[in-house]
Structure formats: C-alpha cells, structure tokens
Image 1 (cartoon, rainbow, N blue to C red):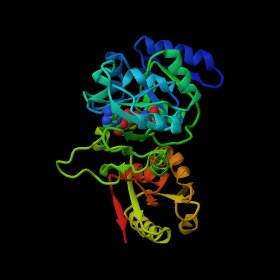
Image 2 (image 1 turned 45 degrees about the vertical axis):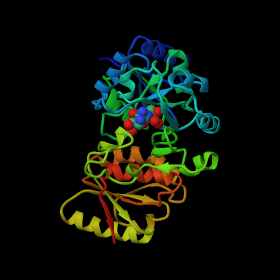
Image 3 (image 1 turned 180 degrees about the horizontal axis):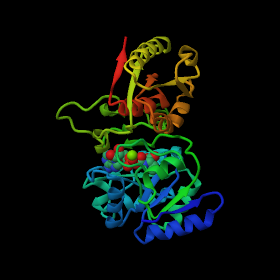
Image 4 (image 1 turned 60 degrees about the vertical axis):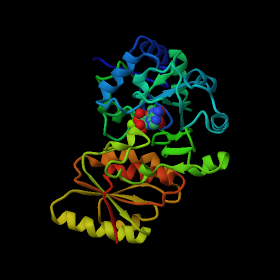
Length: 346
Ligand code: TXA
Ligand code: MG
C-alpha cells in the first residue's frame, strides 16, 4: 500500500479533509493525539475496524477505543450516560481520559472484541478533533505501533511501523503527554485499568475513591484474568533488555552502576535512563536524561521515544523506579511492562 503523508501545520484542511474521506470509505489513517499517535478507522464499520487489527498484527480479543469530537457524541455509543460519566466528562474532556461503560447496539463487536462494554474518549489534540469531525463518525483507534512495540510519539516512530500499512499518515509533530490515555471503567466501582495523564489523584478530586486494577503494577498471576484484555500482552517492548532498579535515587543509581559494570564486562552495550536528580551518579557511563523525578509527567513524555531511540545498538537499558504517584503511576506501569517486570532491589 502507498501511504500518503500530510503535515498537520502546512496542509491543515487538505490533510484532515482527505483523511476524513479515507475513514468514511473504510480506510486507515494515522493521526496525532495529545497522548500518542493513533491508527484510526470508521468505528461503526466492522470490516474497516478489522483492517486495524491486520495492520498492527494485534490479537483481535483486545478491544479498541472510540474517539469522538464532542461530549454528546458518547450518547449513541453507550446504553445510557451515567451521572458519574457526565461529571468526569465535564472535568476532563477533551483530554487523556478514556471511559468504559455498557455499549449500545450501534457499536460493532469488532470494536469491543465481543465485550458488552465500550471505551470512549474525546481527545484534546486539534488535528484529532478536526479529523473526527471531517469523518463524521466515531474513530476506532489503538496506538499506531506494531503490536508489542512502544507506542509512537513522533513522526519518525510512526513511519517506522506504519509506512505502507495505512492509507494516510498525518504528521502532527511530537505528542505532549507521551503515554496513552488513562482508562477508567465505570462498570461497578470506578477502576483504573490503565493509568495515564489524568491521574488517580485528579480523578479522586472529582468523584472520590478510585480503585487501581491489580494488573497495573503487577504481572498477571497464573489463571488470573485481566480486567482489561490489553494488560495480558507483553507491551512496549523495545529491541533490547530493560532492567528497572528500585530504591531511593541513590541506591537505585548504585544498583545501576554495579549492574552496568557487570554487563559491560560481558561485552554488552549499556544505556542508562537518568534523571535530572541522578545524572551526576553516572559520570563516565552512557546515559540520557529522560526527565525530572519531581515532575513525573516529564518522564512519561519522553519514555516511549527514548525506548525506541536508545534500544538501537544497545543490549540493555537500565532505568530507575520512581514513586507510583501522580503521573509516576503511568510511568511505572509502562516501564515495568517494557522490562517484562525485571526489577532489581538491594
Ligand atoms: O491515548 C490513547 O488511549 C491512545 C490514543 C490513540 O487515543 N489509544 C490507545 O489505544 O492507547 P490502545 O488500543 O493501544 O489501548 C486501549 C486499551 C487496551 O489496553 C484495551 O485492552 C483497553 O484499552 N480497552 C479498550 N476497550 C476496553 C473495554 N471495553 N474493556 C476493558 N478494556 C478495554
Ligand atoms: Mg496500544
């Protein structure tokens, strides 16, 4: 397939106009959002949705998110809109929050993988909103990576995975949040199935107590079923090993320095994900600064791009664990999965 590339800044109307028609005709469009790039298709057309699974190599028991351009567009997609959803939509939409509730008959089984619930989100990115409006239908879209790879947060990483697999790609530059949206189930007690830019603390400030699914920070036990099908797959895996060091910044750095030296003796190429607070511990070693430990959103913003860029020619990446609070919960969720839960503690 020949992929047509548009620039969101210089070819604004043209890009979303063409892409909107491609969606209506059953094709695939990669578009920027504030979280990560999405691979979109007409969310009301089961056949079009199947093309997403093919293009990504995604297991088709993993349901998709429907993207809408205005709050009231959620109405036809759910059985009804519960009050708690209205409260959350008013507080956080448009933005990186996906809400799961009972689906209506309008939503094809291909989107929900046969579940009786559907995930919906209204993104904040102007290009995403313009595209959804141009398409005139909800857009089903997972992250625009090949299944298992870190989600793409810039155009180079999109092209790496999706050139030749989508009809249109819209280049919107780097994504601000850098990790996928918070996924919150509103069936039963509100539960975070996947943490993201809208934090547990922010949600609790509006609706009170929120649960966090066990699978967010722990590998699934034998025979355990994931509340969210996506949780059971190896995710965000770069082309090298990732090892997480747990402890205070000083002791995490000590573990990393010790293991780095060992790995180097074995002839391995090593890389460290350092932070502003810890960079001085790693003098003389290969490291990149990926953000500020006190502003975990900065670590989220660069994690996926760093996993892709730094895994090239590298055998092992060492990264520090940070407290699983605020955006730190999303950071640790992605980092632990990228490492296959390989954690070293003193
Ligand atoms: O930020 C985002 O959410 C990005 C951008 C493109 O919007 N999209 C994204 O989609 O991350 P995807 O497909 O990569 O992740 C959707 C997650 C998966 O873990 C999936 O299992 C879960 O949401 N999910 C979707 N529908 C669900 C449902 N009905 N019940 C439980 N989990 C669901
Ligand atoms: Mg994904």
